[in-house]
Length: 117
Length: 113
Image (cartoon, rainbow over all chains, first blue to last red; front, side, top):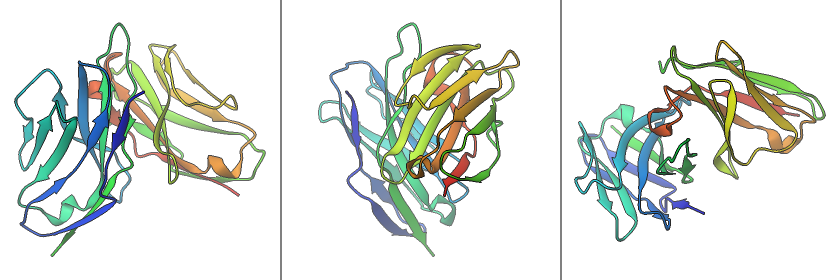
């Protein structure tokens, strides 16, 4: 079974600075997807960024980027120029490569990020 | 706004009761997923429907059931409720059976007293 571990229950950062959230996972699969979701106080789950395991290039979405280390099974999220609106719970998630159907998302426990003014 | 609508937003009920949570997926999305978020278990996948048929099953209790109707909305039925069922229940939808484009609703907060 796949597991996702987020070792930082809480983090804080000053506005405009950079912060990195850690995520490690365990799997025997070679093809899979990794995700970072953001859950602000509104409770909405928002997809931040997605990485396909077969792609060596790290995914980037504006101020959000990942450091994907497949051999180390590590998938960290870097937030640059942090903004107050980035305050939220961040969840790392894993999904096996779908084969003829769909696969469930396996989530980590989350990291609570606070951006301070 | 993700386009996924869940009702009700909040629900308080007593132990032993039965409730129904409703989800309307984004227009055109065929797949609906249900997740449970609790403090001790985190986010757990419950079940997925695709175009009216059950496609995948996760950690869903026998007291829980779901269905997807011809208009593609879905309902999650929770019966014989226990205190431990108190959680946030999310619905997500995607255009196909592949999960990589799933969009989440705002969830239903269920409190069992």
